[in-house]
Image (cartoon, rainbow, N blue to C red):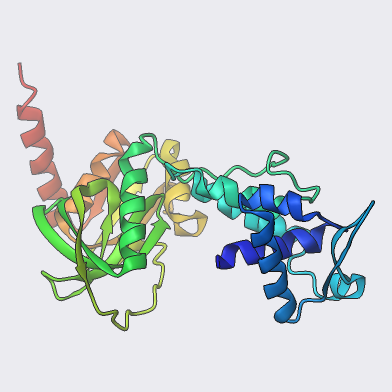
Length: 301
């Protein structure tokens, strides 16, 4: 017996004054007899359900229970539908759309009457949608996955025990126990290739609680001060927040960064073109100047 169907039927009954067995059977694509079994199960669980035959008949929940024990308020139901809609944006199936219809069945909150749009997919939806389905199934079945991972440090083959699919920093990640590192790691889905569910079961571990790190770039081993042109102020605010911006005595934007390592810090500063200048320490200015000279040589005519 599907628990989601029981919850769905209960949700419909709480939102509608009455519903017929045939309506529920069509909605959940089951027989009338199966619906009767679901109704009996809900009754045995203590839900005060009763039926009425003949003209105007149907299945009802006692009115007092309906008023006092409503599962979700209107605001809560909208939040549920918004969440389901956002998941459907990265799914290659219609699972979440069908689930939305079941939750909103019989209510005035049609899935079409929406003014909040949450799209979790990237420009290339296919880059993560299939991976999400593979990883989600592996998590549910407690099966290991393998993949090739491409990072600034090069490529590597990985096998992990997947535990969480995480959407943060505008990207999708999988968190799991890496067999190679013997530790918990996060991997960006767009950097993964040749992803496979290898069908090997694993025993669930006590995984550390997930703690989001908003300013992941700002924690590390190096510290530097960078001056920015006012034309890129929007980007500093967008990526780090307004509180991250400081001004020097001349009214120019100067930001103190801490970063994981020098090479990745230089790569980030390069994305600003000539709208950023490393002020200190002097050794970073000199190293960055050397990098710019090497780049310039590639374009000498």
